[in-house]
Length: 338
Image 1 (cartoon, rainbow, N blue to C red):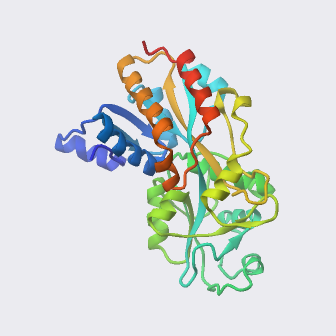
Image 2 (cartoon, rainbow, N blue to C red):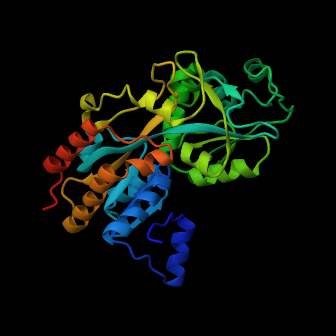
Image 3 (cartoon, rainbow, N blue to C red):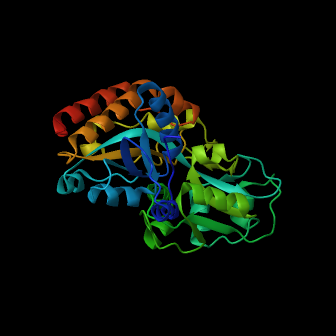
Protein backbone atom coordinates (compact mmCIF):
# COMPACT_ATOMS: atom_id res chain seq x y z
CA UNK A 1 0.00 0.00 0.00
CA UNK A 2 1.44 3.36 -0.98
CA UNK A 3 -0.12 5.38 1.84
CA UNK A 4 0.95 4.93 5.46
CA UNK A 5 -0.51 6.49 8.59
CA UNK A 6 2.68 6.48 10.64
CA UNK A 7 2.76 7.10 14.37
CA UNK A 8 5.99 8.23 16.02
CA UNK A 9 6.37 4.74 17.45
CA UNK A 10 6.09 3.29 13.95
CA UNK A 11 8.68 5.72 12.63
CA UNK A 12 11.06 4.63 15.40
CA UNK A 13 10.32 0.99 14.65
CA UNK A 14 11.17 1.53 10.99
CA UNK A 15 14.46 3.17 11.95
CA UNK A 16 15.34 0.28 14.23
CA UNK A 17 14.60 -2.39 11.66
CA UNK A 18 16.27 -0.52 8.82
CA UNK A 19 13.11 -0.71 6.70
CA UNK A 20 12.20 2.11 4.34
CA UNK A 21 8.95 3.39 2.92
CA UNK A 22 9.17 4.03 -0.79
CA UNK A 23 7.21 7.12 -1.68
CA UNK A 24 7.51 9.85 -4.26
CA UNK A 25 5.70 12.62 -2.36
CA UNK A 26 6.33 13.20 1.35
CA UNK A 27 4.01 15.10 3.68
CA UNK A 28 3.03 15.13 7.33
CA UNK A 29 0.53 16.67 9.67
CA UNK A 30 -3.17 16.75 10.46
CA UNK A 31 -4.98 13.52 11.29
CA UNK A 32 -8.31 15.22 10.41
CA UNK A 33 -7.96 14.62 6.62
CA UNK A 34 -5.89 11.42 6.81
CA UNK A 35 -8.69 8.99 5.82
CA UNK A 36 -9.33 11.04 2.68
CA UNK A 37 -5.65 11.47 1.83
CA UNK A 38 -5.37 7.67 2.04
CA UNK A 39 -8.16 7.23 -0.51
CA UNK A 40 -6.74 9.91 -2.79
CA UNK A 41 -3.26 8.40 -2.58
CA UNK A 42 -4.49 4.95 -3.52
CA UNK A 43 -6.42 6.23 -6.54
CA UNK A 44 -3.59 8.53 -7.62
CA UNK A 45 -1.05 5.69 -7.45
CA UNK A 46 -3.23 3.52 -9.68
CA UNK A 47 -3.64 6.30 -12.22
CA UNK A 48 -0.14 7.82 -12.28
CA UNK A 49 2.23 5.39 -10.59
CA UNK A 50 3.30 8.12 -8.17
CA UNK A 51 3.12 7.28 -4.49
CA UNK A 52 2.38 9.35 -1.39
CA UNK A 53 3.88 8.94 2.07
CA UNK A 54 1.75 10.96 4.49
CA UNK A 55 2.59 10.83 8.20
CA UNK A 56 -0.56 11.39 10.25
CA UNK A 57 1.10 13.04 13.26
CA UNK A 58 -1.14 16.00 14.07
CA UNK A 59 -1.23 19.59 12.87
CA UNK A 60 1.46 20.75 15.27
CA UNK A 61 3.81 18.08 13.96
CA UNK A 62 2.98 18.99 10.37
CA UNK A 63 3.81 22.66 10.95
CA UNK A 64 7.05 21.70 12.70
CA UNK A 65 8.12 19.33 9.94
CA UNK A 66 7.49 21.74 7.07
CA UNK A 67 9.39 24.45 8.95
CA UNK A 68 12.22 21.96 9.47
CA UNK A 69 12.12 21.17 5.73
CA UNK A 70 11.90 17.42 6.36
CA UNK A 71 8.75 17.10 4.19
CA UNK A 72 7.58 18.58 0.92
CA UNK A 73 4.29 19.72 2.41
CA UNK A 74 2.79 20.12 5.83
CA UNK A 75 -0.89 19.77 6.66
CA UNK A 76 -2.76 21.59 9.40
CA UNK A 77 -6.32 22.17 10.52
CA UNK A 78 -5.20 25.21 12.50
CA UNK A 79 -4.44 27.70 9.74
CA UNK A 80 -1.49 30.05 9.91
CA UNK A 81 -2.24 33.75 9.62
CA UNK A 82 -0.99 35.57 6.53
CA UNK A 83 1.64 37.24 8.73
CA UNK A 84 2.93 33.90 10.07
CA UNK A 85 3.03 32.47 6.54
CA UNK A 86 5.10 35.43 5.34
CA UNK A 87 7.56 35.13 8.24
CA UNK A 88 8.15 31.45 7.48
CA UNK A 89 8.20 31.83 3.68
CA UNK A 90 5.20 29.54 3.33
CA UNK A 91 2.13 29.39 1.09
CA UNK A 92 -1.13 28.06 2.56
CA UNK A 93 -4.40 26.94 0.98
CA UNK A 94 -7.48 24.95 2.03
CA UNK A 95 -7.63 21.42 0.62
CA UNK A 96 -11.01 20.17 1.80
CA UNK A 97 -13.60 20.85 4.48
CA UNK A 98 -15.03 18.52 7.10
CA UNK A 99 -16.44 18.53 10.62
CA UNK A 100 -15.57 17.75 14.22
CA UNK A 101 -18.17 15.70 16.09
CA UNK A 102 -18.54 14.72 19.76
CA UNK A 103 -18.59 10.93 20.19
CA UNK A 104 -19.75 8.93 23.20
CA UNK A 105 -19.75 5.36 24.47
CA UNK A 106 -22.93 4.86 26.50
CA UNK A 107 -24.66 1.51 26.56
CA UNK A 108 -28.00 1.55 24.78
CA UNK A 109 -27.55 5.02 23.26
CA UNK A 110 -27.80 5.26 19.48
CA UNK A 111 -25.93 7.65 17.15
CA UNK A 112 -27.48 11.12 17.23
CA UNK A 113 -29.83 10.23 20.09
CA UNK A 114 -28.13 12.40 22.70
CA UNK A 115 -28.44 16.14 22.12
CA UNK A 116 -25.96 18.65 23.54
CA UNK A 117 -25.71 22.41 23.27
CA UNK A 118 -22.42 24.30 23.23
CA UNK A 119 -22.57 25.38 26.87
CA UNK A 120 -23.27 21.86 28.12
CA UNK A 121 -20.55 20.38 25.93
CA UNK A 122 -18.06 22.94 27.24
CA UNK A 123 -19.07 22.25 30.85
CA UNK A 124 -18.47 18.52 30.32
CA UNK A 125 -14.95 19.18 29.04
CA UNK A 126 -14.39 21.71 31.85
CA UNK A 127 -15.19 18.95 34.34
CA UNK A 128 -18.16 20.90 35.75
CA UNK A 129 -20.67 18.29 34.58
CA UNK A 130 -19.44 15.01 36.01
CA UNK A 131 -22.20 12.42 35.43
CA UNK A 132 -24.33 11.52 32.44
CA UNK A 133 -27.55 12.09 34.36
CA UNK A 134 -26.57 15.52 35.69
CA UNK A 135 -29.36 18.07 35.32
CA UNK A 136 -28.09 20.02 32.25
CA UNK A 137 -27.79 16.82 30.18
CA UNK A 138 -31.11 15.43 31.43
CA UNK A 139 -32.86 18.69 30.55
CA UNK A 140 -31.77 18.32 26.91
CA UNK A 141 -32.49 14.58 26.80
CA UNK A 142 -35.69 13.95 28.71
CA UNK A 143 -36.54 10.86 26.66
CA UNK A 144 -33.08 9.24 26.77
CA UNK A 145 -32.17 6.73 29.48
CA UNK A 146 -28.96 8.15 30.92
CA UNK A 147 -26.77 6.24 33.38
CA UNK A 148 -25.84 7.71 36.75
CA UNK A 149 -22.16 7.13 36.04
CA UNK A 150 -19.09 9.33 35.88
CA UNK A 151 -18.17 10.79 32.50
CA UNK A 152 -14.70 9.98 31.20
CA UNK A 153 -13.51 12.86 29.03
CA UNK A 154 -11.07 11.95 26.24
CA UNK A 155 -9.08 14.69 24.52
CA UNK A 156 -6.06 14.93 22.26
CA UNK A 157 -2.64 14.69 23.88
CA UNK A 158 -0.72 16.05 20.88
CA UNK A 159 -0.66 19.41 19.11
CA UNK A 160 -3.83 19.17 17.09
CA UNK A 161 -5.76 21.21 14.56
CA UNK A 162 -8.85 19.17 15.40
CA UNK A 163 -8.39 20.37 18.98
CA UNK A 164 -7.90 23.94 17.75
CA UNK A 165 -11.21 23.83 15.90
CA UNK A 166 -13.04 22.07 18.74
CA UNK A 167 -11.77 24.48 21.40
CA UNK A 168 -12.40 27.46 19.11
CA UNK A 169 -16.01 26.33 18.85
CA UNK A 170 -16.30 25.94 22.63
CA UNK A 171 -14.76 29.40 23.14
CA UNK A 172 -17.37 30.92 20.79
CA UNK A 173 -20.34 29.38 22.61
CA UNK A 174 -19.13 29.33 26.23
CA UNK A 175 -17.74 32.45 27.96
CA UNK A 176 -16.54 30.19 30.77
CA UNK A 177 -14.50 28.07 28.35
CA UNK A 178 -13.16 31.19 26.62
CA UNK A 179 -11.92 32.71 29.88
CA UNK A 180 -10.56 29.54 31.47
CA UNK A 181 -9.13 27.57 28.53
CA UNK A 182 -9.57 29.36 25.20
CA UNK A 183 -8.77 28.05 21.73
CA UNK A 184 -5.51 26.28 20.93
CA UNK A 185 -3.82 23.26 19.43
CA UNK A 186 -2.67 21.92 22.80
CA UNK A 187 -4.51 23.70 25.63
CA UNK A 188 -4.27 23.08 29.35
CA UNK A 189 -7.13 20.61 29.66
CA UNK A 190 -9.08 21.01 32.91
CA UNK A 191 -10.34 17.41 32.86
CA UNK A 192 -9.94 14.07 31.17
CA UNK A 193 -7.35 11.75 29.66
CA UNK A 194 -5.29 12.28 26.51
CA UNK A 195 -4.92 10.19 23.36
CA UNK A 196 -2.77 10.77 20.29
CA UNK A 197 -4.41 11.69 17.00
CA UNK A 198 -7.99 11.36 15.83
CA UNK A 199 -7.16 7.65 15.66
CA UNK A 200 -6.22 7.57 19.34
CA UNK A 201 -9.29 9.46 20.55
CA UNK A 202 -11.59 7.26 18.45
CA UNK A 203 -9.92 4.15 19.85
CA UNK A 204 -10.05 5.37 23.45
CA UNK A 205 -13.75 6.26 23.27
CA UNK A 206 -14.65 2.96 21.63
CA UNK A 207 -12.86 1.07 24.43
CA UNK A 208 -14.01 3.18 27.41
CA UNK A 209 -17.58 2.93 28.68
CA UNK A 210 -19.35 6.19 29.57
CA UNK A 211 -16.72 8.27 27.77
CA UNK A 212 -16.94 11.30 25.48
CA UNK A 213 -14.41 12.62 22.98
CA UNK A 214 -14.23 14.55 19.70
CA UNK A 215 -13.04 13.38 16.28
CA UNK A 216 -13.27 14.26 12.62
CA UNK A 217 -16.50 12.77 11.31
CA UNK A 218 -14.82 10.23 9.01
CA UNK A 219 -13.33 8.52 12.07
CA UNK A 220 -16.72 8.33 13.77
CA UNK A 221 -18.22 6.90 10.61
CA UNK A 222 -15.45 4.40 9.87
CA UNK A 223 -15.30 3.06 13.44
CA UNK A 224 -19.09 3.16 13.93
CA UNK A 225 -18.84 5.44 16.95
CA UNK A 226 -21.91 6.95 18.56
CA UNK A 227 -21.95 10.65 17.72
CA UNK A 228 -24.12 13.26 19.42
CA UNK A 229 -26.42 15.81 17.87
CA UNK A 230 -25.75 19.49 18.60
CA UNK A 231 -27.88 22.60 18.92
CA UNK A 232 -26.57 25.13 16.42
CA UNK A 233 -26.42 28.93 16.39
CA UNK A 234 -29.98 29.13 15.07
CA UNK A 235 -31.19 27.07 18.03
CA UNK A 236 -31.93 24.02 15.88
CA UNK A 237 -30.94 20.45 16.71
CA UNK A 238 -28.77 19.00 13.92
CA UNK A 239 -27.08 15.67 13.44
CA UNK A 240 -23.73 15.44 11.62
CA UNK A 241 -24.22 14.86 7.90
CA UNK A 242 -22.79 16.00 4.58
CA UNK A 243 -25.78 18.32 4.13
CA UNK A 244 -25.22 19.94 7.54
CA UNK A 245 -21.51 20.42 6.83
CA UNK A 246 -22.25 21.88 3.40
CA UNK A 247 -24.77 24.29 4.93
CA UNK A 248 -22.08 25.64 7.27
CA UNK A 249 -19.40 25.75 4.57
CA UNK A 250 -21.69 27.67 2.22
CA UNK A 251 -21.13 30.84 4.27
CA UNK A 252 -17.36 30.89 3.70
CA UNK A 253 -16.08 33.80 1.60
CA UNK A 254 -12.55 32.62 0.82
CA UNK A 255 -11.84 35.54 -1.51
CA UNK A 256 -11.83 37.86 1.48
CA UNK A 257 -9.55 35.67 3.62
CA UNK A 258 -5.89 36.85 3.57
CA UNK A 259 -3.66 33.81 3.17
CA UNK A 260 -6.84 31.71 3.13
CA UNK A 261 -7.12 32.08 6.91
CA UNK A 262 -10.68 31.00 7.67
CA UNK A 263 -12.49 29.57 10.71
CA UNK A 264 -15.89 28.04 9.93
CA UNK A 265 -17.24 27.40 13.44
CA UNK A 266 -20.70 28.48 14.67
CA UNK A 267 -21.98 29.56 11.27
CA UNK A 268 -25.56 30.85 10.87
CA UNK A 269 -28.30 28.82 9.22
CA UNK A 270 -30.91 26.42 10.56
CA UNK A 271 -29.26 23.39 8.90
CA UNK A 272 -25.62 24.25 9.73
CA UNK A 273 -23.42 21.89 11.74
CA UNK A 274 -21.76 24.20 14.30
CA UNK A 275 -18.27 22.65 14.42
CA UNK A 276 -17.23 22.68 10.75
CA UNK A 277 -13.63 23.24 9.63
CA UNK A 278 -11.27 23.34 6.67
CA UNK A 279 -7.91 21.57 6.55
CA UNK A 280 -4.92 23.27 4.95
CA UNK A 281 -1.70 22.53 3.05
CA UNK A 282 1.57 24.39 3.66
CA UNK A 283 4.44 24.56 1.15
CA UNK A 284 7.44 26.81 0.72
CA UNK A 285 7.31 29.72 -1.69
CA UNK A 286 10.83 28.77 -2.75
CA UNK A 287 11.09 25.00 -2.26
CA UNK A 288 14.54 23.48 -1.90
CA UNK A 289 13.52 20.46 -4.01
CA UNK A 290 11.62 21.96 -6.92
CA UNK A 291 10.94 18.59 -8.55
CA UNK A 292 9.35 17.29 -5.35
CA UNK A 293 7.26 20.45 -5.07
CA UNK A 294 6.09 20.01 -8.66
CA UNK A 295 5.08 16.40 -7.95
CA UNK A 296 3.16 17.49 -4.85
CA UNK A 297 1.29 20.19 -6.76
CA UNK A 298 0.38 17.67 -9.47
CA UNK A 299 -1.13 15.46 -6.78
CA UNK A 300 -3.12 18.32 -5.26
CA UNK A 301 -4.29 19.40 -8.72
CA UNK A 302 -5.48 15.85 -9.39
CA UNK A 303 -7.28 15.78 -6.02
CA UNK A 304 -9.13 19.00 -6.86
CA UNK A 305 -10.05 17.76 -10.35
CA UNK A 306 -10.84 14.10 -9.66
CA UNK A 307 -11.07 13.59 -5.91
CA UNK A 308 -14.46 15.12 -5.11
CA UNK A 309 -16.43 11.85 -5.14
CA UNK A 310 -13.94 10.17 -2.81
CA UNK A 311 -14.25 13.19 -0.50
CA UNK A 312 -18.04 13.10 -0.52
CA UNK A 313 -18.04 9.34 0.11
CA UNK A 314 -16.31 10.07 3.44
CA UNK A 315 -18.54 13.11 4.16
CA UNK A 316 -15.83 15.68 3.55
CA UNK A 317 -16.85 18.78 1.63
CA UNK A 318 -14.86 19.56 -1.55
CA UNK A 319 -13.69 23.11 -2.11
CA UNK A 320 -15.97 25.06 -4.49
CA UNK A 321 -14.74 25.41 -8.08
CA UNK A 322 -14.32 29.17 -7.69
CA UNK A 323 -12.02 28.64 -4.72
CA UNK A 324 -10.03 25.94 -6.54
CA UNK A 325 -9.47 28.37 -9.42
CA UNK A 326 -8.26 30.97 -6.91
CA UNK A 327 -5.91 28.43 -5.29
CA UNK A 328 -4.39 27.47 -8.64
CA UNK A 329 -3.64 31.13 -9.30
CA UNK A 330 -1.92 31.26 -5.93
CA UNK A 331 0.26 28.29 -6.91
CA UNK A 332 1.23 29.96 -10.17
CA UNK A 333 2.10 33.30 -8.60
CA UNK A 334 3.57 32.32 -5.23
CA UNK A 335 5.36 28.96 -5.54
CA UNK A 336 8.67 29.08 -7.39
CA UNK A 337 8.94 25.43 -8.37
CA UNK A 338 10.53 25.90 -11.80
